[in-house]
Image: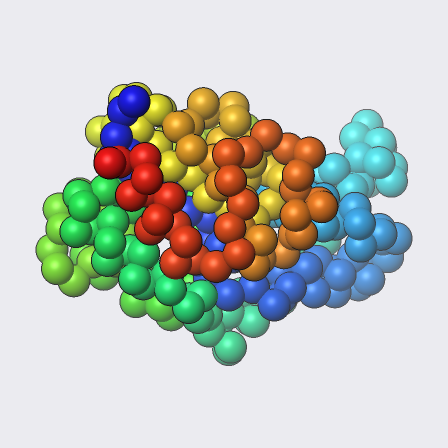
Length: 244
C-alpha cells in the first residue's frame, strides 16, 4: 500500500470552526431575495461552490431559461458574498482544537498539507489571513518547502477550478500543484456529503468524514467513506496506521 504523501483538508467545519455561520449567511441572502428554501435543502448543499448553490435554487424556482434567472442568481449570490465577507472580516476565524497539532505532525512526516473549500477565493484569503495560514504562500497559493513558518503547502478555492465539489477537481488541482501523481497517496477529510463524494470521485486512499462539523453521522453514513472521526487529533492516528 502506498504511504500517504498528501493530506487534504476542508476548511469550514473541518479545520476552521463552523458554528453554522455559512448557513446563516445563506438564509439571510435567501430571505433578502425572496426565496423559500428548507434548512434540509441548504444543508445538503454545504461544501458546494457557493454560486452553484444559488444557481441550483433559482433553477428549481424559475427554470434556467427564465429571463430573470441569471439576474436573480447574481442578486442572491452578491448578497450572500457581502454578508459572508463582512462576517469573517469582523469576527475572524479560529481553528478547531487539535488542528495545529495535526499540521505539525504532517509537516514532520513530510506530508504535504492542502486546504480545499467551497468558498470563493476572496473569502478564502480573508480566512487564511485571519488565521495566519497564508504565511509563505506565493501568488499561486503554494509553498512546497517546509520553511518552519508555514502552516500549509497549498490552498484551493472553489473559484480556482471549473467545477467545485462534488466534482474531484479541487483535490486533483491540489495534487498537481504539490507534484502528487498517485491519488492512492492522498488522505482527504471533510464534514459534508460533497467532501465525501469528491474524495470518492478522486479515488483517494483514505476518505474521512469529520463529525464535529456541520453534518451528523446519520447524514453522512450513506456516502462512501473509510472512517468517521469526532475530533481532529484522531487524524494523526489514522495517518500513522496507514503509513506504518
